[in-house]
Structure formats: C-alpha cells, structure tokens
Length: 447
Picture 1 (cartoon, one colour):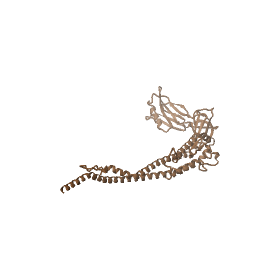
Picture 2: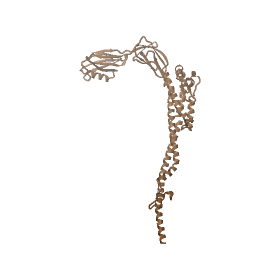
Picture 3: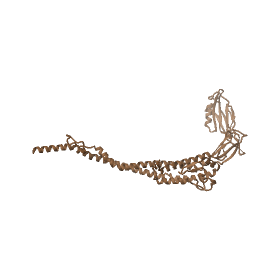
Picture 4: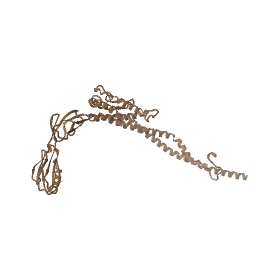
C-alpha cells in the first residue's frame, strides 16, 4: 500500500494515481514506430528539397546549353563597328556576313514641310475653298467648309485623314499658322501644294529628298536615313553628311556576347556539378549529402562529366573545350581562360561555331542539350522520377502517421477509462478497509 500511496488510516479516501501521466507514458512508449516514420519523413523532405534544387540547376544548365545550339542565337550574332560613329553606325542581325565595307554619306534624307502665313488666331473663321496637296505621287483635295473653317478644326480634320501628313497649329506674336509635316522622309513623302482656292497662303519650308551615299563604291539612294536593304541583315544609320569622309563599317562576330554566353554556360555547369559532388563528399569537415545513396544521381554525375569531355576530329584545331581555353579540374568543374577563348572566337570563329553547332554531326552544345533534355524531362527524366517517388513515399508516410494518430486517440480514451476505474478503486480502498475493521470490531464485541 505504501507503494501506491494508500493511507489506510484516512477517514475518507486514498491518494489514487495520476491517470493522465500514466496514460501519457504508455502512449509515449507506443509511439516508437511513429518517431521512426517521422524521421523517415524528415529525411524524405530534405531529399526532396535537394532534388528540386538540382533539377532547377540542371534546367538552368539546359537553358545555357540551348543558347549555344540556337542557330539564330548568340553564336550567330554579329556586331558592326564604325570608324566614324558621328557620320554613320550600323547593327547586324543573325545571318549577316562578316566583312569590311566603305561608306560615304553624301546627303541625308530630309522630311518635307509647309507652313501658312499667319491669321489672327487659331479660331479665326476661314473662307471656304479647296487646297490640293500632293504627298509624293499621291494628291488630296482638302475642302474648307463650315465644319473645319478655323486652323484648329482644319488641323484636326487633316490628322483624321490618311494623307501621310501631320498637321499642327503654331502661334507667335504675329498670329497663328498651319504647319504640315510629311510622315515620310525622302521624295516619297515630298509635299507640294498644287492648287489653292482658299485664303490661306502656303510656304514650302523643306523639300523631301532621298539620302544619297556610296557603299563599296556603288552609288545608292534611300528614302530614309535608316537603310536596311543595302547589306543583308545589316541596318545602317546615316547620321550626318560627310561627302569627303570614308566610313569603315566592320561586320564581325560578337566576341563579347559569345564569350559571355560560354561563361554563362560554364557557370551553370559548375553550379550543377558542385551540388552533385557535395552529395558524395564525406570527410572530417563535411558529411555526405542526403542523396549520397541515390544511384540516379551517380548516373547524372557520370553523364555530365562525360558530356563535357565531348570532342570532334580536325575542325581546324578546335576539337574540345580545352582547345578554346576551357579546362576541367579534378573535381569535374570547368574554368575559362577568357584571353584564350576570345582569341579563338575572334581568330577562328567558324571552327568555334562548328564545334558547338556542327550540322554534319551533333555539335557539343546540341549533344549536351539533348542529354539534359532526357535528364530533366518532367515525365521521364531521372530526377523527375525520383521526385515523383519521393512525393509518393511522403504521402504514404503522412497517411500512415495520420492513421496511427487516429488509433492512438481511441487508445488514449480506452486507457483513460481503465486507469480512471483503477484510480477510483484506489481512492475508495481506505474507506473499504475502515468499514471492514468496523464490522470486525462489532463481531468481536458480540462474542
């Protein structure tokens, strides 16, 4: 009785037991499997996070690899330098042919314009009449009547028509004038007032003339100062007249853009391979990663290391990444000698482009991009399969734990009921003993 804190001398009841504490202790012991499941769940969650990070890194690597496969992308980009950028500049699109061109800008294309003599104000009523306005080879009759018989209304009316002319009203201390400016430069947009029965007096302030220039000795004209037809995929911007200045335009591969794209690829590759390597590192300073036992990750690591050792034969010396200054370290990471890479791009560009984008055989970039497509495929990629399995296992454990918790709720209720009964009995025990002793005393006295 001493062990269960009973007091036989108590006039009322015993101390009983702590039902809640006892039930909690029992359930804590029974929760041992659940703690193992929770540990497994935490491990799966960590693995899932790592898998998703790796998948994102490989997708980023694929994007950078694809940029090197794109036949209209950075490896096909050209830039144009000008020896006199105040006279002319130029830009190039994919497909522009590298070369050097001589340009002489003899005359710029101009925009034609007219203005009228002033009237009192922009709201002064104008007399009726007709203005015949020529725009290039087109002619338009502008009728002034009660609907448009002020400069404000007339300008608004002209701007609603498809004449190829912008009309406005300008005012100074002499009064208001109607201004007409062609929307097209060159002779195609030249303005001419061919007939006028109105009271407005028109003055031609500028004629529309075509740009005149020579390119590689060939005399050419253009209705605009932005010339797109002279050189395929090259746009020339004529900025000032300089008939005695020969401007050298040099079309060449975009060395900076290409080296940046290669460096971006190397950076993305290094991020991915370092993350993969870290899963298998185990020494005094670091433990292995959560995916150390993942065979699929080993396969991906092997595939990437194999991909970056891709090589071709011949190709004017550009046979692998190392031949253009991209070397591999012992841990599989890459480093770029930008001086060597820039020299290869500027001095041996066709070979560099062919290495990455060879049409005869898969070039390096296409080979890598194709492999990455398989690795990161959302339906059949190794990582996608691993992520899917991980998600399925987590769901299964979550349901197992939930079901187990449901059973423990019922178990708690049962244990609580049982031990509450024990508690009630123990609390009643001293009174029962007291009653028995009283009965015994009565019997003894009667005898």
